[in-house]
Amino acid sequence: MPCIEGDALTPTGKRLLEALTEPRTDEEVKEIISQRLFRVRISLRELMFAGLATVERGRYSLTDAGRAKLEEGKG
Image (cartoon, rainbow, N blue to C red):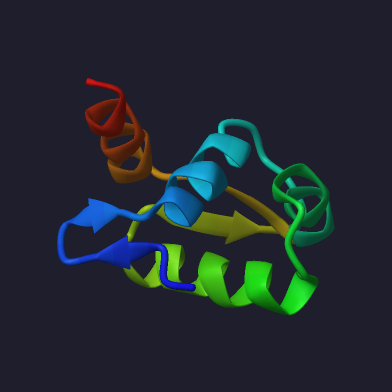
């Protein structure tokens, strides 16, 4: 399940970014979006590679680009 297709977020990608509006562990994200942990981890890596998320001390959060992408999807 990709998070990004071309330049757009997939529904999964949008749910992940919404879950990261405050720093969370991968386990917390898993509970919020109701996905298996391995899928969450793959998706988080995809978002990090795209520069939309970052991780510090095991907690994932949005980058400025991630916040902008999330806002872009609301408009």
